[in-house]
Amino acid sequence: MIRRLASMALTASVLAAPLAAEPGLPPEEAVAAALLDHPSVIAAHARLEAARARAEATGKGSHEFTVQGSYTRRDVNGGAAFDEYDAQLSRPIRLPGKARLDREIGTQSTAVAENVAEDARHEAALLLAAHWFDWLSASAQAEVDRAAVANYEAALAAIQRRRDLRDAAQLDVDQAEAALAEARRALEQSSGLAALARTRLAAQFPGLALPQQAPEVPLPAMADARLSQLGDEVVVNSHMIAAAEAESARMAAVADRAKADRTADPTIGLRLFSEFGGLERGAGVIVSMPLGGGHRRAVAAEASAGAAAAQADEQLARFDVAETATADVTEARFRIASWQRAREAVSGQMAALEKLRRGNQLGEIDLADLLLGERMVHDAFRREAEARAEAMRAITKLRIDAHDLWLGD
Image (tube, rainbow, N blue to C red; front, side):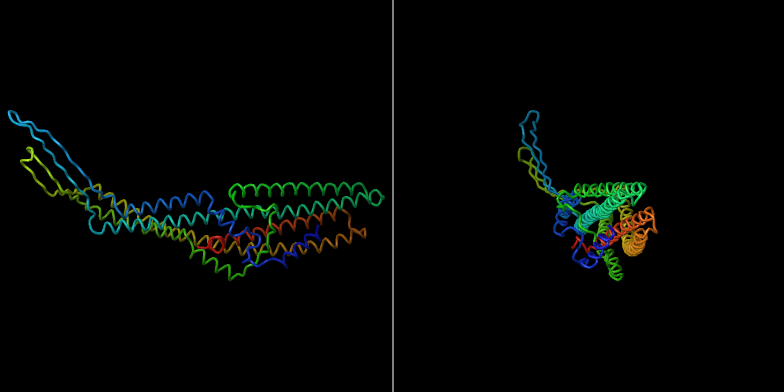
């Protein structure tokens, strides 16, 4: 097991592709299609279309022509009957400045929806990455456990032959069988976790074609300066901040619109009428205008408070994104360092195991100590596999948050 895993690690270190080649990740084209097909992204784009339609309606305004008319048959006692009618065409008129504010509200509403749609794709990408690395991490540990089972099976067979030759005691066989049983238990658990992670990934992204075997987790490698650069890009490319800015601008325009609406829009129209069977005819212009009161004043105050809250939410969004950027960089750094220490632990445990094996062959080290050494090496390889996956998970999350991966705008 140890020689096989060491060979795998050395091969990976030599052949690992550069990070830009996206080793260990699904094809970018397949990811792009899977993200667009995710229900959360589809819903966000539908809301974007709704926002665009609403912006068009807001820009045009709800002021429409109204046609009104009546017909009357009048009878005069002792006289004739007369046909009378009147017709009226009217339309509210937006006062100067209101149309501009309505267009601004529509523009900012669309900007909010556009950024929310992009942020939904961002969240879907993070979800895909999380499930993907759950699968890769569990699969990598299952591979270590599989190698351990093969190693313990070979060891048990060798000890059974020695027992048959009366060169080993039954106790040694029992200890080897116990070690093999524990290794098989660990393999069942890691294989089950890998299957579970793959199932969850397939359930969330059914359109993403998954290989039968999980790709090998590449070696984490990223310069510290590049980590810092990506952290800065998290803030620069944040759609959460852009959406909050647009929402703040929209609410400011809504507040200005409510303040302007304290002076109501007038309604202007043309009226035609005929009375006494046409003996009296006339035409005229009609004007009506609501007189604003406490209701309009309260609506304007509510909108002003909403604009202040949106400004605070914008600042909060900046805080949240800055925290995410800092946390992403910090986690990537310590995950990479943790993996490096795990590799050093593997090297140390392998060196110790070689000494235990030589001592056992010379009869100076009993089997229990050797099996303990084998188990410690096995555990060291499992920790290395887990640390490697977690480091790559952290790097991938940082790249997604920085829009350096899968989210090219």
